[in-house]
Image: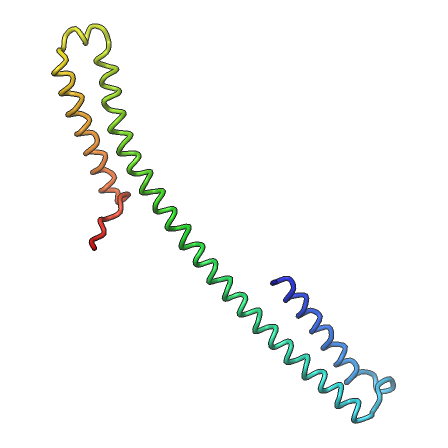
Length: 152
């Protein structure tokens, strides 16, 4: 659409140059017939109106494209916010899974397993998971990576 409008405007300006050349060109070549000169003047006025209309159409298209770009940027920002929210919560959940897995690996080593009984190991795993997950949540909250609660 933009390309067609630019081509149309170029054609109009070329036509305007031709009309002006016919109207105000070489006096020996151009007729001094008033009726013919008036018709050429009318053609020039028509081309001027077409040029003004095309330039107005160009402004309308430009504003429409700005609106579309604003809508697109808004939707892209909303998607980006959702993905950041998801990534933050996945970080909290990864902490909840990583800490007990690491501790279970440490406790699974031969000699340590013999020294500590299972209820204590289970208690350590549960408490460390809760504490690590809570600390990660607080960390994300202080960094303001978690959006505030929306009250309805």
